[in-house]
Length: 94
Image (cartoon, rainbow, N blue to C red; front, top):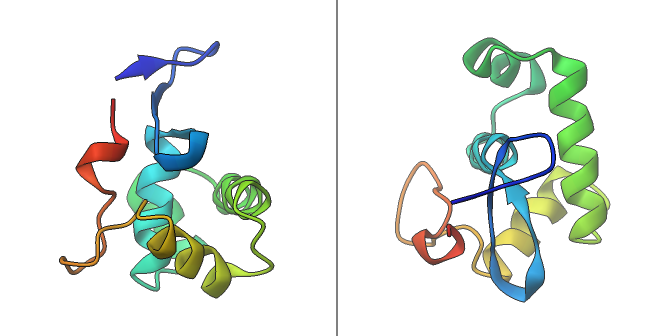
């Protein structure tokens, strides 16, 4: 797995989309229906940080809300369709 300029791990999903390991875990949680509050408790991040990452991913995927974000992630095969809770596709991780 590569590192970004801040030293965070990043994965390379399809179509040049780049998600950090934190964003990948957040996307999995959003796809499972978790709130920002629950994700912040589970990932030890503030809910504002969770919301920031959701906004960044939504912008990258041109999604207007969380439902559209998850839908686009499935269409682009960033999220696997054969597991529950949803998981990032292994081929999207470098």
